[in-house]
Length: 194
Image (cartoon, rainbow, N blue to C red):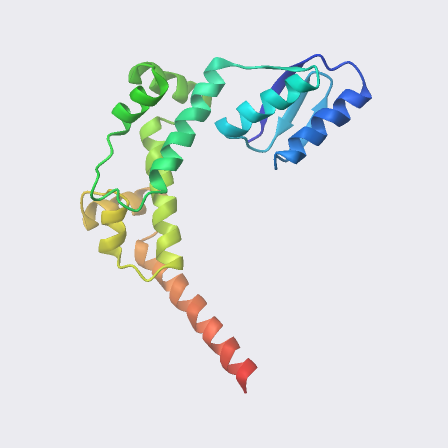
């Protein structure tokens, strides 16, 4: 899903080129840039603030939608939290974290998020946690119990139930992908060494 940015002060083709150049400099992927509007495939809060500063030096201004900025901040905070490997040791209560970091009431955030994203914060968080589970199942040697603990699930059963409910597959299916990948890698290595 693209993020649309509204930009004040764009009046000509050179403006479009300048904005497109700034987007690319920040590592963003512009999907469409026209007078007053730029669409990018994704942007985080840090990139949004940096883009705003860069555009101002060119004489443009980013028209920020506070609601969209809050939604992106919520996503960024959830992603940052999931990058930690100690979720089992430090249980995260996302409602408290989001209220603290955004300064907004959780019910307001939840309603806003659901309206913009078509999914609740809780479901979004579960999907992102399960993405982390899939990553570890395929790319690590951690046991399913260790993964459940590290991603903050209360038990192996809770993880398995959520995984099956959201993906329609069992966690062991993803472990098989890892085993198959390792086997193929082993065969390639043997073939190259012979």
